[in-house]
Length: 162
Image 1 (tube, helix red, strand yellow):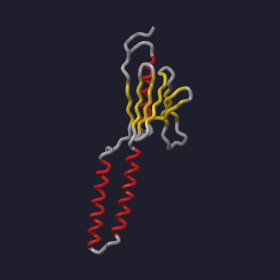
Image 2 (cartoon, helix red, strand yellow):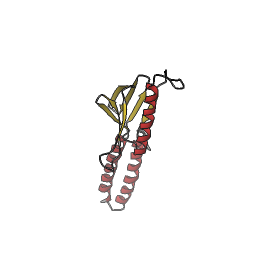
Image 3 (cartoon, helix red, strand yellow):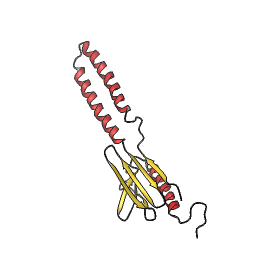
Image 4 (cartoon, one colour):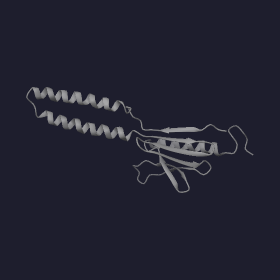
């Protein structure tokens, strides 16, 4: 029996979820510190714009942190391929029989789009690897296909079939 093979896909992020607030606090302290210094010197109109700047940067950091806070896991076992998509408040799971699952790398609709990497069978398709580049999607599709073929073959690795 083959051990299960796991593929973990997640966006590349310079900060984890605990570091985003620290970055924001650092930016707020620096920006508002400079603005308060100018306000003390008599240039008080800088302060409202600094506050707007801090709010805009906070919104952008929130959107970036939220967009990179997910993980996909593809697990290939002897009898099924499981796809798990985990976000903050949303967990989804799909399971496909290993003998029927297909890996598709659909060409993009326009030349500037990336190809879509799909796993599925019987009309149920799941897109994975949205955070990956085109080359990384191709490499992942090849690796998953090899593992599916390896687990679906009647003979194990190193054994002659038939």
